Length: 217
Image (cartoon, rainbow, N blue to C red; front, side, top):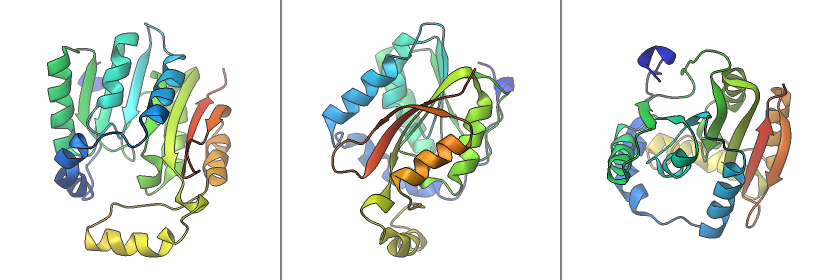
């Protein structure tokens, strides 16, 4: 995967928030290890050795690096330079060479149509200004029959009050941009962009949803 394969995005000011918390984020244990392992297994059931993946909002690279041995190559992007530094360190320590990390935002990221066999958007759609734009872009970048895997906090299910306090927290710099929507609204967004939902799973108490969606052939 060369630099001509894609165009990195301009990184937004919100990258400063994620740079600031990156080291603390990297030290935190997974909140629900059993659910995380199940998501990994569901995803890996779709993987093949010849596949090319994109992960946007990759954070410190943990998930990309876990999938790397099962595929040909992965491009993992994030807006936080510090998150990516940690991800690169992890890759080097593990001897993984088929994951390329790049600083980019999905909002402006571009790649040729039908570039990827799978796109991962994990814990990210609720942090975007326009999730529909991102999902539409994912659809274009996927090959026919390609798979979009997402795991998304849906605050509208149980915590709709975040519509009021989220913007205040963001303005004060103590919260990232947070979009409040329900599982039903998210699933509708994915379907409206032309995907077929193959799996939908809500772990725990219903604050998030894990979705596997396929682009029709």
